[in-house]
Length: 109
Image (tube, rainbow, N blue to C red):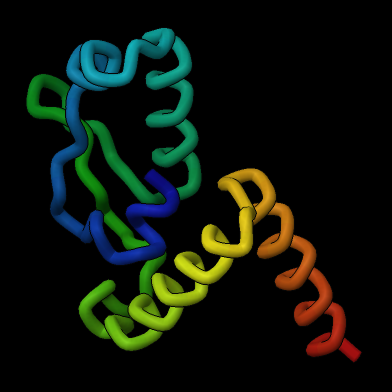
């Protein structure tokens, strides 16, 4: 959900699926879903309306995915090169995290 908020896929006013709907689709413990929803509420990102549902009240994204289409296209190209070089999902994630951390360190200097 946090990624969906960051990417602008969930925006203010969107209704979240019920805990039961999430559990049916993802096969996850209902307590885990309830805890995640409570955390979103605690952070001021969502609000429960008894008898109606849980709604997004604030987004984390500054722009929608459509606004970043060219950047996403570049990323798709890089991912294709990484896979062609033999990297798998975990390797790609590790490389991204390391590189992201290095660039964040450089920016903070």
